[in-house]
Image (cartoon, rainbow, N blue to C red; front, top):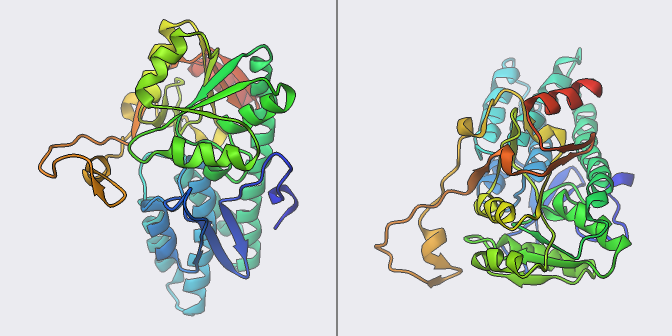
Length: 355
């Protein structure tokens, strides 16, 4: 485990590990009942883990894909085939199509391919170094975002977060939860609320569990209670992560994020999106162009092994929604914060930092 991957006293969860030439993923489908790491040593297993939500969260998916690239390269080189490049591309395509909405997946694979293209001869050890660099850089970026974002919460009484954008969704520390962690370290009276986040219950199963691991008190609410919570003036900010940020600042994030943004505007409280620059997709002009993943009916009809609705019921199960930039108070990245984000401000931030 590299230096940046080591746990701090306020950050005790790691969802992704590379040990003994294998990838280990904390199976987030089992939390909070059981903590089990899956040992993964094939690219097919990596793609399945991403698709089946063993690992989830845009940054974590990107990191996992980078390690998957290493496994794919190892596989094709061991075959000693003359057309290993074509076989590698097949593996990369498999990874790239495992989930469609989070832009970090394709970003990480492109970065890995670019690094491979620089080599006179393919080197598995050097490619592993690149995957580890992506992992370490994500944690470092999260720490910076925690610093930038927490400044907005200095006088905050309470904060609401949605889904899980913490260590479980990243390389470590977290995006939205990274900001909350940093803010709580400076203000122990900060009240943290988490919405349950149906249908996968990432807020209750993952965020509440993760904060508990770090001794940060959290109050759980039903998704439908958010507007009333805001009306009671118990929260001053909503803080979320993002799976994709379009060039104009529109944000694709877990379904329900848009509702929280609308309610935040109605109640005149701040709405913060926290995301690394790898989540910004300048090739997507607005949220209207983002492919929204839809998943199966069973996620709405069943919880665990119990039916909670008639099996014949029709369902509409989008995993993400689009929050327009007009509803976002501030977009926090590792390069700095952008208030009232738009395309001009985003491009200026990237240009000024040579991106």
